Length: 427
Image (tube, rainbow, N blue to C red; front, side, top):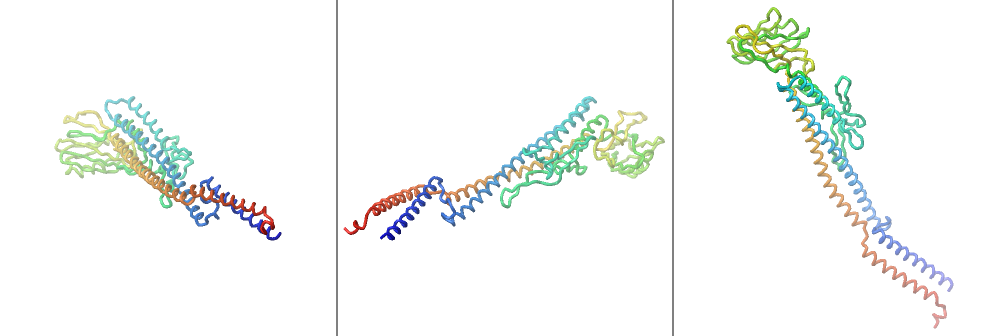
């Protein structure tokens, strides 16, 4: 009888302990609202829940990347728009400087403003994001993208890297432009040029606007006096007479322009213009039919930008039939020295930066579209996590009440049975 009673008590205690453990587990699930507290609660569901949570963490990382990418791209877009505004203003100033009513002081004031605007553009090109990274320096984000040297030249210090962030497992988005492509390789009629070189050229063209001309004309005859280096240098220009136009090219130097005279005379049948070199080394032009002579589109080898101090040029003097000078002497030099050329190059710069903005805009659209996809993907994952991991409180409370009721009834039965003796059973 003693052994049977002990065994009965041990089994009862074990059963009550199990019931209390189940009740505690249900109470914890009700309190947390979670269906799975330990993997042992439902191993298969626990594995699925872990996978779903990993997916949510991955989506959240992509969302953070999208936010970071959007901020950087917005900053880049704003910087490029500011750059366009600066170049547009310089173009407007160059056009103003080409006005004949502007004097020396007016042009000096314009040059000073161009200098300030150039500094502003350098500052824009050295823009950094909120984390201090240079947005136009490629992968060299810890340095300024551009440096202004003591001689005024501006060079690129970054590399050709383009940073990117992942917006999904297989979708990267470019978040930066390298400064070399953005500011150093603008395609113009003169080839690929730097934005900063073109700004410098525009300033020089403004400085010489009063004296440099893109063409000169005379009726009947003209004299052209060249300022040249000792070593031969290539000159090209168009010459027009009563019969037509021809392109002339020759290598000439100080005291030696005979090759140019020969080249012009080789085209006399086309143009009607004949040339000779006088005793002073000047080029004498005569229109055989006493028509108009015009020289235009001058190109000088080695002159790729406008210069502050024009080295090589030609003074064009027009004569009447009596050999008297007509009008003012016109200085002809390379087309790059002419304001209109600088304005055209500045327009090319604006178009180039606009194309860079279009690329940035495409990346922004990509980020916005993927942000929506990520939002929907996260919602789906959250629903899956909720389906697997969230508790059905109504069902749990019902189970809890039932379990507590069963436990209490069992405890009461155990107490009652435990109070009885053998004699109670023998009645």
